[in-house]
Image (cartoon, rainbow, N blue to C red):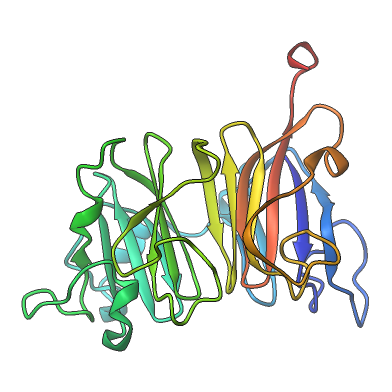
Length: 268
């Protein structure tokens, strides 16, 4: 995999193959930062970035199921069963089950981020199902993304749904509310989505990358632009090498990553 990155770099968290410096600059446009065939996953955090080497299990995080099976009270979780993904946003959490059901819980003062109405039986502070994401026209949810006060969910049929606290988020998403609503980008199918502290990336089925939100640290990969109020397309022709295609996106709080693979010669 080839990893491209842009944005916040105060702790050299985007420096993989070159020595870090004492006062590193942010990166203003998508730049190749790592070439390593065995890397299969990336986990960006505020002050560091962790990549996972598929050849060595020691570099893998423990599975969610193994954490939840421990006896420690901090891992007590009666529902939902069979969690396959867990994401965190500014005031809470969201989990995805193997059946494609989404559960949320968090601060009761920001219930718009829950995507559901808290009740006595299912209060904000305990996991509750987001029923608006059940039985969608294009199938169950296959991936979650979250950051700041925004959450997103992708369906098996490549549709994107978002919800969150419009008053708190700088992202100008159409129809953003406390109920999951479809997000349409040029009528394209969506392959992947990532959300940072105040920005968002989307990978479409034609391998284009669209960005939205703040660009104060270069996290959108759009030099000279302070923010994007509407979806902006990254000029990948000016960024990627010959035969390279984007296969996934990721976001730290203030930076962005493109997972890139090179197509076989016969496919170019």
